[in-house]
Length: 76
Image 1 (tube, rainbow, N blue to C red):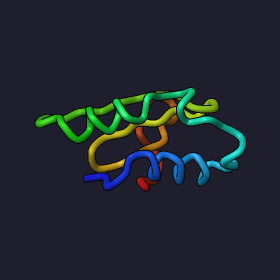
Image 2 (image 1 turned 90 degrees about the horizontal axis):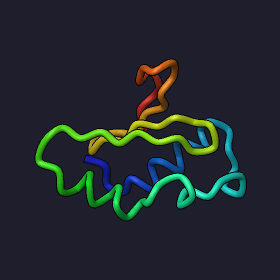
Image 3 (image 1 turned 135 degrees about the vertical axis):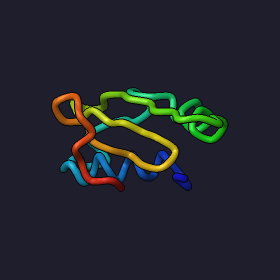
């Protein structure tokens, strides 16, 4: 399970070449609600969103970059 989804999302965006000053994560997703969903779900849950043109899929286990409607990226 992700210890801190926000940190993993930020690290994933930075791995895509974005600088921390290039985006505001809170403009793309409500991170407090995201963490509540991930931490309170008893089943399979996946949240997808786009931040600065980068499509992400977040599950309790990983943050993945979505390419061509498939989760074909490296896990963080």
